[in-house]
Image (cartoon, rainbow, N blue to C red):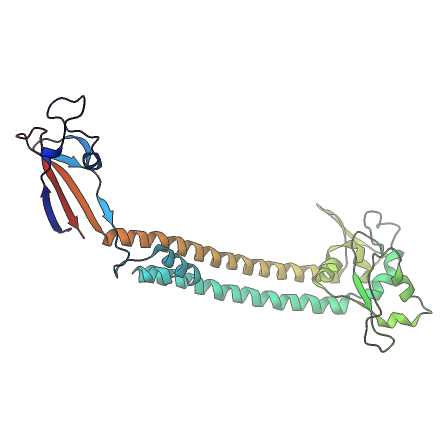
Length: 316
């Protein structure tokens, strides 16, 4: 229940003037005081209905809650803004969602990293750079007309030639798609540089060897005489047992990493929702605890204009 703390009357009937064209005794609604409070025709009895209450917010009062502060607190630490505006249960809920999402992300991310290590170790033992290079151009004939397995396809692998002179510098860095075909020179039988050639095992490398037919000949169980060609929606695919296993390992790693990514999105979304909730919650708190001024015009039939004063009340 709101308690009226202050009630006073201001007699001002003698100061009011009739409107320029209004009849005697009419209330001039062009006057600021009247226009501010008068929102309807005269009600039955001796009063006129007052307009909406005016909210007086004291930002220096200890109970005031700054909306911007509440929003920032909840964005940085979910639930903290809700505690700030005296909603600890809601704050605990936002905090619990954030903590739970973090542990779920940690679990999926750890599983994903293990799966990445698994498919990389598998590729390192079953796919060979030199084998691919030496055998790629030997594929052809029956069964291979729909699959491109040559050295120079649409994708490339980066390689380096290690220090051969003892000066601590890489002798050469290039790509299998280089127009000058330097790799052919490094791999010739009469050139001892072949032992110093190393492929760069980047993320792109591990993607390419499993994704594109161009690198099929690098698998140790690749069979060019009895090809296993599968027609798919994206085109024909040349399979070997090892390539199938490898692609399965990579698919599982990508799935786990995607789930970890979705969890991070949930965490960010929770921060934003908590910040918005704290913003509106702080505004509602301030309205609830603010001082409210309301008022009404008092009618007096005995006066010239029919208005005897204004009643104002202050509640908080």
